[in-house]
Image (tube, rainbow, N blue to C red; front, top):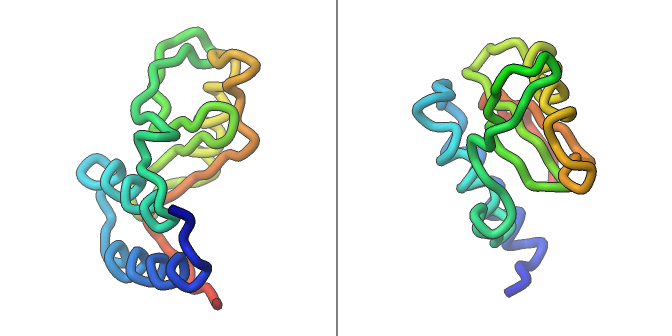
Amino acid sequence: MRLSQHEIRKRAIEFADKWKDESRERAEAQSFWNDFFEVFGVPRKRVATFDEPVKKSDGRDGFIDLLWRGTLIVEHKSRGGNLDKAYGLATDYFPGLKEAELPRYVLVCDFVISEFSY
């Protein structure tokens, strides 16, 4: 079922309020992303996987925090984490992905939800 803009906006506000005080990546990142996809009425399991194993650019094993093949790669850190470093880590995974799996978007997150207008 397609959600209205009004419903998505309502869910986004509820999401932001629910997660505004969270800070711990290991404890809550996966729940955060499950809730994020539900803002749009999409079950996360329908489009994305967690902890996807991949070879990094240096040949070592790594695990992508969240991968939506061909669309999005997410690297999640605890609140205050270095997002520049997180971006570098996310892009280090690219050589281990097949061409069709390469994401259009890279998203790094540390639970900080900036104010937004609607």
